[in-house]
Length: 446
Image (cartoon, rainbow, N blue to C red; front, side):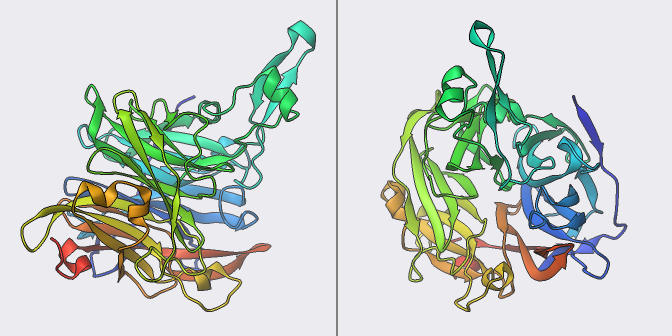
């Protein structure tokens, strides 16, 4: 069933950009709450999306999908690289007491560079990630027995497209097609685990979906995303702009078994860099193609970058971030690439609250001067330098390249720690700022 989500304005003002701008402002007194920034770009346009969690009445699942109440995905657009922002629009609305449309959040988005078409994937429904429990259902006996995936207790998956730059969205539920990538409903799977399947919970990690600049089928360039699952971080790819997906490396591949929310970046040679959330830093792994057209290749072993001296440290926290590879030029004129990784630097102060441990969102950077600098995951263990974006209590972050070649950042800051119903939760202002590579690297590259 196709659902049409027509956007409408919630704010009448246009906000000029500052060094740091609150694109979405959480206000406890007015019971307005936001989380989960996503930022994508095309030419001089930016589209900033986030979770509107103002409809949550009880943070029974920490305020995420599965909590009491409704979550919607909202967006604001800029046509001048973030100098001004248009009024807030609803992209995908959560409504009702149960079912697929009760809530939609954690948007993963890509803006096709060629056509201008937008794709949005999201976590949906009424069941939280932690409570998701997919099994194989058996009906009948003997030769008449049939086996199907039982998705009645699954966290669900939504897919939405916009043909008009984010004004309106059309979408549908694709839960079954995503879970079935990994688990076939058969007598064998039913007997082995009494109906239990290996991948029993999943969602597409929020933020910017990576689009290849090198690999395409016809006029469509390959896109990559990562599923957060109980089996770790599992990258997937699509050659038809999200109509169908396949696991990168095959259904059995587990390139980061202990990885959490993750992102993908394309390396200069077309290889795929995986960067995963972990407590203390980031897991990195690389998929190297033997045949890019058919996506044949292999993963190596993941490495953990956690060092305070040259690593991508995230002290005492595990938080979603973003990886980005951009072309640059050194002072001597040499053409290079720069790897950028956002993550909260954190702090060493003991605390039971994420709001105190998640802080100092920063961007780590390192120069990739030759293929030897990205030949294996171990190349990303060290050699990073940190630039601090904010010294506040800050959490999730993402970034993209704007129409001027600057790096545009979206991140959670100014945490509001509150009790919502029966459970504590954290809400944030969703912030925006841009920086040049020169500013980030202290003039090392531009």
